[in-house]
Image 1 (cartoon, rainbow, N blue to C red):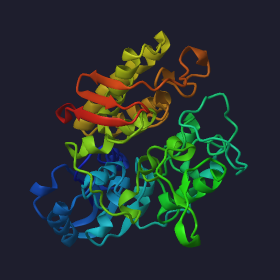
Image 2: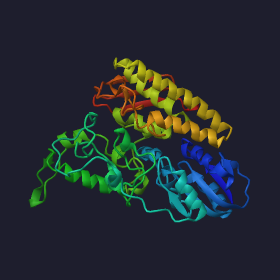
Image 3: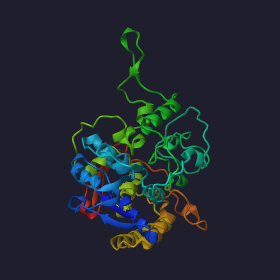
Length: 413
C-alpha cells in the first residue's frame, strides 16, 4: 500500500512520528515536507500533518484529487491544535475537514501511530475509555474552596479538579501521552465529545459555584450580570482560552479574534499564556527541538529569579539535550528503529514526547525508582514580573505571570 505523509505548517512532531510507519515494511511510505512542490501522482493513502491555513487549500485539493483515502493526523490537522491559539490574534488556523472532505481524523498531540495504522488499514479503532476511567486519582465533585494555578506534588490521590487545578480529563479519552501520570493535568488533546472546551468550562464553572465572582445589578428585574471588577474566579483563571481550548479553538464556535498580531503566528500562540503553562506548550510545538526550546524558557526564568536547580536535575536535562541531538540525526536519515529507541529514552526521563515531567526547578515525578526524588523534585515558584532572555527567545511577563511580549528566532527551531 502506498502511503504519502504531507507536512504543512508547524512543528513536524506528528510528521516525525510517522517515521514509525516504515517499521515492518508493511507500507511503501514517502515523506513530503513541502507539499507545494509535490509532483502529482496517484496514491492509496495520504496522511496530512501540521496546522493548516486557508491558502493551503489549493495544495490540499491536489492531494485530495489523487488520493483514495485522506487522513488528518494529529490535533493541528484535525482540530487546529495548539497553533490555533494564534487565532485570538486574527490568524485562521483551520481544521482539515473544513477545507476538503476527508476519510478520518486521528486526534492527539502526538497523534498515536498505532491508531494511524488502523485507520490506514481500514480497521475499526477500538472504543477508548474516558481519561477519568484510567486515572488513579479519585474525584468527589465537591464544590471548590479555591482555584489554583500551581499544585504541590504531595497529593497523588485526589483529582486535579478537586484540588482546584483545571484538568480536562472529564471531556477527554485515554491517550498514549497520558500527562496525568506525571503530575500534570490533562488539557484535552483527545476530546471525547464535540466542543469539549465548552463542556469542560461548564463543568469546571459548576465546581467553582462557591468562588466569589463580581456581578452588577440588572435593571427591570433581570438576572444579575457579570461585573468588570477583578474577583476570585476571574483572577484565578486569567487564561480561559489557553487552558480550556488549547487544542480545539477553531471548533469551539468562537469567532476569530480581533486583537492585532504581535508578530509571527508562533509568537502569537504564546501571547496571553501563563508562565506555569509554558513548559506544557513548548513541549507540544517545538517539534524535534522541543527539549531545547522548553529548557531555554525554563532556565531563563530560573536563572533570573535564582530558582535552585540541583546537580541531578542538570544531569537529567543534559541527557535529554544529548538525546535530542541524536533524535535529529535519526529523523534526517529516516531511521525508524533509531527514532523509536531514542523517543523511548526521552519518555523515560521527560514522561512523554510533550515533556510533561519537565518543570521549573526539576521534574514532576520520579524518573528512576532508585533515585532520591527530593534531589530533583519540582516545586511551586513565585511569579515575578520582568523580561527574560535565553539565546533564541526573549519574553516579558506582567505582574500575574502572563506573557505580554515575546520574540522567538524561529530559524533556530
